[in-house]
Image (tube, rainbow over all chains, first blue to last red; front, top):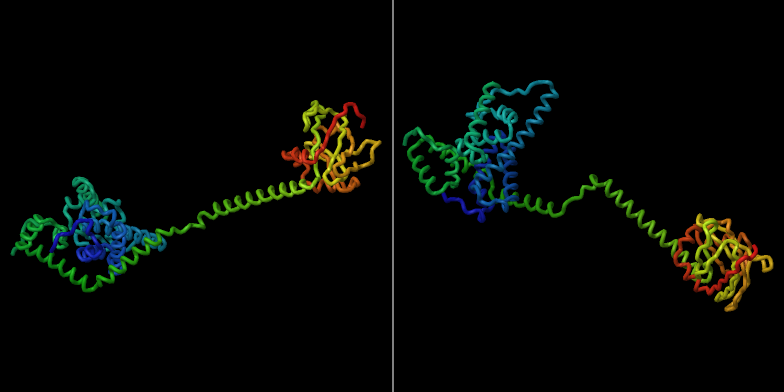
Length: 165
Length: 264
């Protein structure tokens, strides 16, 4: 298992061989179905290739791809939440969501609902923490916040989930 | 191999799996994996996921697709599409303004060209300014004229002809002067290189005025004369604005003299 090459040598072939399965896996977990995950994977790689000149190697390519995929998937979730809310409002009924169990990341709709109820930074923190299994130090590095801030936001979110359930 | 109490984060195992760790971290994870069955199980799951993914997806096809899409995006960026709908009002107004200015320019040019074209032959010569109430004003040949002054003139037209005199005031109104009673009515006969004597008295009631001598091939009645003068310019007032008329005057070799106290 060779270490990743320096940034100037980054190519789409390398990015595909090393990380495509990981990006696909987390897109699948975030979006909940294979078709959306396929589309998201493609979109993430297109965006990465378009911005590859701007990639200066300040973080690893994997971190970079994770960031792109997180933003893209969260945007998709936000859009789908909007659509769903509009439909639910039209039918005058509440969304049929059950309680969310974040530790297992099992009820995708409930997760989407909860992700839609928090701010952008907290959404990213939740994804990195519960989906990618990062510890708080790693999350803080990814979202460029201090560890106490990350901890505070996580606690606030967990408290909100408990109150909601 | 047994289960440990302290595990690396799953993300770190993922990074190890992707080859994203440096040497020290890699050694550390390898040591942990050799001791921890739970983390090894997770690592194996990642390996299995990778194999499944690569078995289900064609690498070359994916890369070709991404490159095609990027190429298309790049091409689209190079040729930005104009949002004609958004800027339709601006485009419409700009186009209308350009057309309007071109038409005005052409119209002005045509009118002026036509006017000067008519002047080329022999037709028009410049007389004097006079001032009704505000006093005398300097004429073409630096001669001071007053109301009721009589102008005597000699015309030597290149091809001969008859002279009619008319004035255009500052409002563009036309007035036609007629010869003194002792002269031939309505026109002044002339001939090639032969001065034709004549005289006219300016009309102070018209106010500021520019007097023209119209040289014609044959004598004309009043209506014909009016028609002819009007034909020179659609707007008589524009005759007052013509700055090149003095030159036309000199070309027709008009000699003007002044005789104070003449009768009308």
